[in-house]
Image (tube, rainbow, N blue to C red; front, side, top):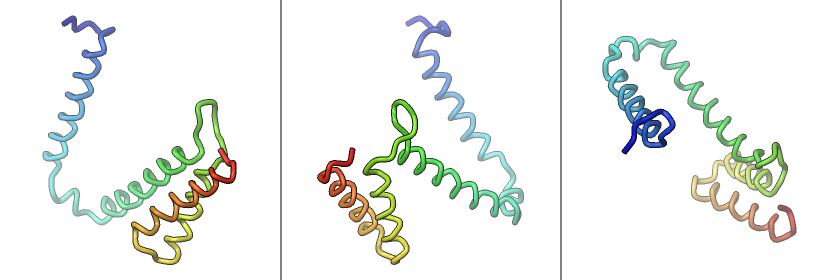
Length: 108
């Protein structure tokens, strides 16, 4: 097996090493730093922001740019179920049913 930079295995192993090094570095962070009020606030907000970005990318992205399709309806139905404080499985089923219904009506 060749390990030149053009090899896919080189990049796979490099990514594995980077992930492992990041995990090890996480264990070396002093506990006092993690218990600081500002760090806990930032990590809470950052988690929500990353999840929102992931949802937005999966809802509006297509091969050639931004698109509006049945995924938007599914997201709106799930958001409505969340606002009504429905259990998580009901939120998922509402989104799936909305997407299926919109696709059955002809939306892409």
